[in-house]
Length: 156
Image 1 (cartoon, helix red, strand yellow):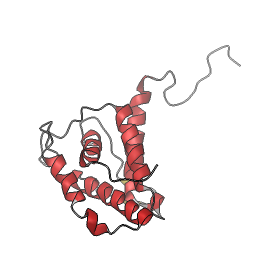
Image 2 (cartoon, rainbow, N blue to C red):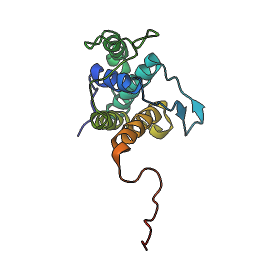
Image 3 (cartoon, helix red, strand yellow):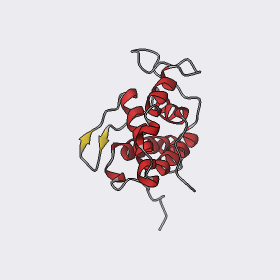
C-alpha cells in the first residue's frame, strides 16, 4: 500500500472526537518529555504537517505541493457540516463516530505519516497514540476485567 494524503475531514473528525466532552487528551510527548500544543488548531496543524512530511520523505515530493492542506484541514474543522465550533469557549466539538472508528482512523493516519526517520519522536506520533489510547479505554469500558486481574476465591 502506498502512502497518501488523507482527506481534511479525516483529521477533523479525529480532533472533534478527542476534544469532545468526556474525552481525555494526554498532552505530553513521552519521547521528548515535553508538553505538546493540544489546542484544536495545534493538533490539526501537527497532524497535517506529519502527513505531508511523510509523503515528502517517502516520495521526495516537494512540500510546496501540499502547502494548502493544513489550511484546508483547519477550514474543514471550523466549518464542519455538523455545526461544531472547537474554536469558541462553548459548544466544543462532537464527532458522530464511535471509538472503534476513531481508533482505525488514527491507525490509518499513523501509517500515512510514519515515513519520516524520527517518527516515534514526533508530536504527531504521540497525539495519535493518545487518541488511540482514549479510544481503547472507551472500547474496553465494558470489559470483564477493569484494571487488575483478581483471582476468584477458590481459584488456582
